[in-house]
Image (cartoon, rainbow, N blue to C red; front, top):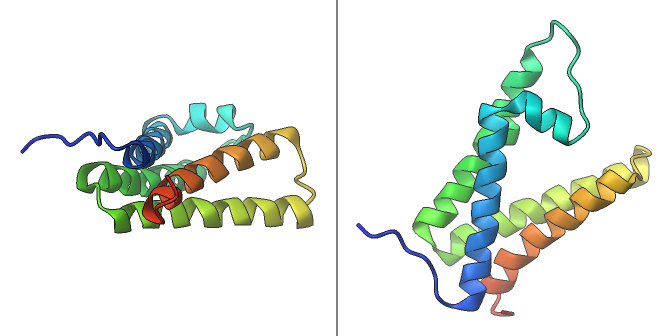
Amino acid sequence: MEFYIPTETGEFLAFCAALVTAVIGLVFVFAPGLAFKAIGLDLREGRRGGYAEARSVMGGFPLGLGLAAVLLAQPMVYLALGAAFALAAFGRVLSMLSDGGNTIFNWAYLLVQIVLAALPLAYVFGMI
């Protein structure tokens, strides 16, 4: 079995978004403390459940979805990836509007989520 790297520009950009997603998930699975520091969060001392959540939800889920998109390279998997990031961006906007989270870091993370949503969705819907 050969590892498939897309040659078409649109699919390659969606593929790159999937790779970035998998790398983000990998960092959260294997280095949740470092990942939390990078995004400016801190866990209370003595509470190890936060690391389990980081490894599971913030790490395992994007890692699995990103790897599935990379390995399968199917439009419907790219659609799932793009939809997941689009809804994550929507959740961040809701937080910024209702929770007082209007910070420069949230704007930067929102921009990353929008790009990671737009690349696979643009490919799936034939825009690139």
